Length: 448
Image (cartoon, rainbow, N blue to C red):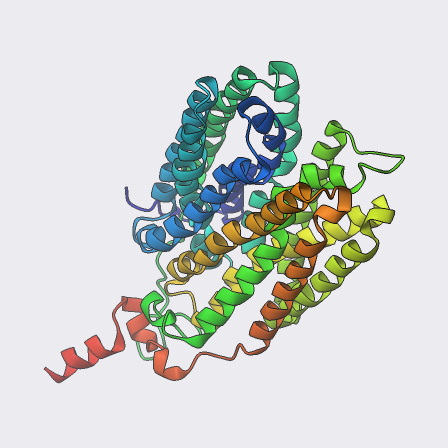
């Protein structure tokens, strides 16, 4: 499947809706916590066990993005969106079968493994295309698309809760909810497949008659892996994601636990609403903070994410259980930083490595998300389970986890401070970057 080239006069503003149709669908992953309580009750799972499909999905997101990034660059966004549609929807259908037959391993395989591949390919499918369509505002462009991933749970959370209420929270009701998800998302993602286009090849020429070339330094994906900048950003993304995803994956039970012993406990419906609010903050942060990065710079915006995020965690740890509005506000700010970090990272990569293979570089960097997808939920769920076994309850289940998250954000802040421009020895020269061959290969050809 060759990349669909936009006809003359095609509006670049038609591309973001195509990206949004994919990201709003796969963003359902952030509503997984709505399924945790009914799965735990229906199948007799612990909190750690019920997190496995989500954790594996995030692991596969990073791995499929890393290994599939080059294919996405080569075959184009339509191919990638088609693969994402098939895998993501099939994952729900397998999960429906697993729930119906009470085979939890099928849910892990379907939602986590197969669906996770759809998450990864779908996530990176529009990124490099949008950067090429919006070279003047890369932060805003990637924010628009990745906003959809953060906002997916805003739709999926109340929708899933309503289905579970209508179909029932037993295994057959969960199975039917999974089935409806798989079919509905297949139709919605198809809109993106049909609508997406790539820019026409550049026809401009330089004053010397040679083809126009990309602006700024250009670094290949293979070369990027050899730079300290790539690994510093890997640490930055991993720490920021770990801190946010730990709350997000356990959002519904966490707010219930925090206020279980107060005069105003949180109901199941209210906890699902809290998940939706977090999704809204996640979504708003992706477009708001990433657009702000076009004005104040990527490094400065990450200082905000990591520094202010540490302060928010400190407030939750110290006084969160005494004030429900404060708890909710701090969680919303943390999730806005979490989403903003995702949306800003492609533009940060573009600034450092250029547009040449930014999609493939972005895919490789998302292995940090895979790591964080294991670390965040594991830290929060494992510690909460151990604390519960020790007889603790309420906010005491999460105190240690919150301190760990603060330490991780401090590590990310230090890594961001060490980021510098990429050394010229890793650059491709301008003509080589346009042709897609390493400098050394061109020099060998000229000397032959």
